[in-house]
Length: 133
Image 1 (cartoon, rainbow, N blue to C red):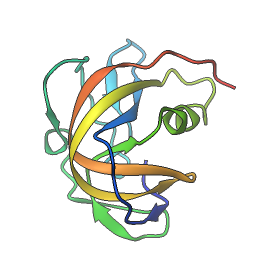
Image 2 (cartoon, helix red, strand yellow):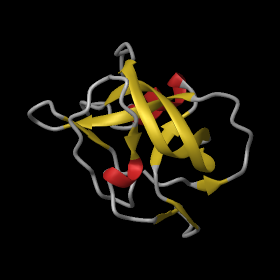
Image 3 (cartoon, rainbow, N blue to C red):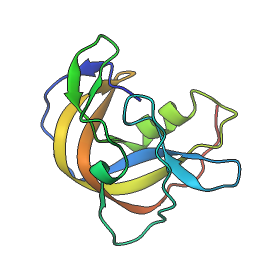
């Protein structure tokens, strides 16, 4: 995923929601946080902080309109937003997980929803798999 719009806004929380893609074998890997690369990760919910630099080599990514911003984990601030992003492809096996984050490096919007780009996150757990509409 790349942000559509870069916009500064105040971030009042450190909890958000990340969409994860699943391989055919059910192993979790991150979505396209680094300009199209899908970086495999078998991490499950735990107390371990994950650093975005360990899952991608890009230093910057670009918005839909070619504005550059720092690479990192893309996290939606609401569950509704993450589920809406996941449901773009209703037949996908993507899952939404609640995450704790720190080190916000950029903020912006994707499909009208607020997204933070962060350097570190901790996976808290899977969100109930609400029906895809």
